[in-house]
Length: 96
Image (cartoon, rainbow, N blue to C red):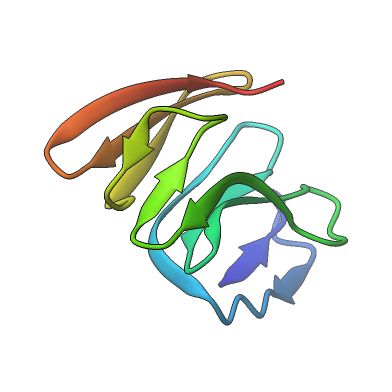
């Protein structure tokens, strides 16, 4: 993935080796993406990604439920709010 500054002044390449589904970028530049281990977030300023939803076996778990068979696509609803397309379901996730 290439991250380009809004004014085009800088370009950085992000090595995301375990991407396994959709990704979305919010207004601040934070990248959310589905990986083989779950839903991850990469901060706008760079740094280390963090896991928001953990994949367990064939499922992704948000807390204890609901179980998601996969993450096919993501989109940003607003600050800290994502829509997740998973196995024909559309789910809203509000992040801490």
